[in-house]
Image (cartoon, rainbow, N blue to C red):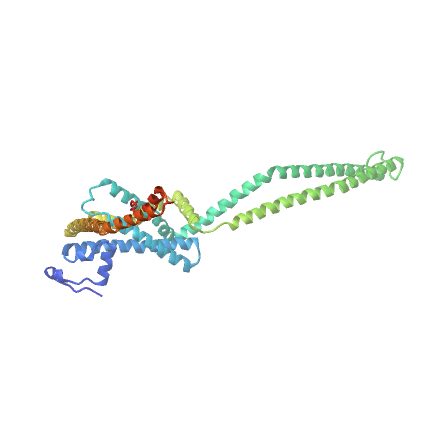
Length: 399
């Protein structure tokens, strides 16, 4: 509901709207004291608007922050509203403590400033993540690739020695097979050259020398086949172990990749890397941080910079009056209690005096009765009579 335009001279009787009352509440002003503070009404509406803007910004920032932690909007929104309420409470506490009488005190202002800056810097992060969302997503992908490469290097370094041992052993076995195969090839070529007359004795046909070379070739070939039969399982076992190592590395890489996410800390890391590698973005980043920081500091700045009016004087006088009334009431209550105790003591004294006065004759009669009874009973001792009188006649002191 919009407020009617009322002349300044007639505003003393104006009735604030619900929205105005809300702004006054946000600015921690007492509406009863603002009723007659015409000029201060607008000042505290301005302070209330800054608190309202900060509250809305904090709620949105925290909601986005929780959306990066959990994908459930039904959880992120209530948590964002809850944290926004906490920021609102802190802001109201900060501006409540600022008035014309402590604006010149450095320590309280310094403490409030540090608290506001701390909250503002943290709240600026979610907003910046949202503004640079596309760039951060690209940078996150690049960072993840770098992490995968680094992880691969670590895994290769972990299995490097064993892989080198296996590869060296495999190469040794293959060299043995290759060397023996070369011997077989040389023996076969010698045998064939002898039989076709192109080498050796130069005689064509199977002669004694050719037969000897054939036997030598067959012998070396048999040794080669035996060596292959012995080395092939070893090479297969080596290849199998190398394959197992490769599968382990692949499994570790896949498990590491599964930990990749786009959470808050991951995005913050990507944003830092993005700023570090992009000088054009760096200056805009710091400018945005300052702007967002000012949003959080707005209530404190507004309350500090706006001049004080009659409202602060009324607050001081009202608080002084309430203190004096409270002190006076306590003193009066104390006087009444003391009067009650004094009169009660006085009446109790009179009652006790009357009690002993009224019972004096009866006690004397009872003493005479005890004395007569003791005289008649010859077997009772005087000490026994005394003990009986103490129990039935004498008074006991109050503890």
